[in-house]
Length: 198
Image (tube, rainbow, N blue to C red; front, side):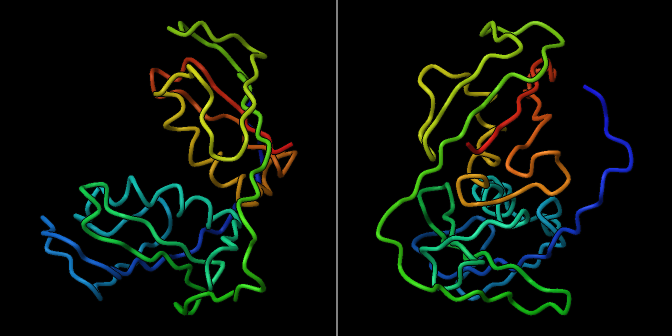
């Protein structure tokens, strides 16, 4: 895959994570009202719980690239839950350049889910794949539904992009803003995928 030269730089926003609910003991002693500032979606605070990072990452990624969560009172925010028995709930908010919360009020409550049709395609193969994926293989999904029998390792890195595209994110640095390319399998990067919102 050719690396694009002079690719436009995207300015990543800062985020605030706030504990809004607690239902059990937290190993890190986080409690309701605690706030954490992230310089961007790739920089959690020092020693921050990686369990929360895992849960929050798709949301942070989606908000970075313009997603709107129309089911939230502030569509530029979302909540996520601790994977350790749901002990904590965090609210994720985007911050502007002055450190203030970006607020885009909900215009109307959605009547229900509005899943997008998303296509995952094998963009490049550079080595062995246990699943035998080949360049050009395509897998279509609706919203956040998982494709039957798909490689779990690959899906774990594809999910944040699927999540973002399902909630109207766009990638201004791509030839097609509705498509994200070069998503590498975690097993040696032998398979690279692209995902397109149809």
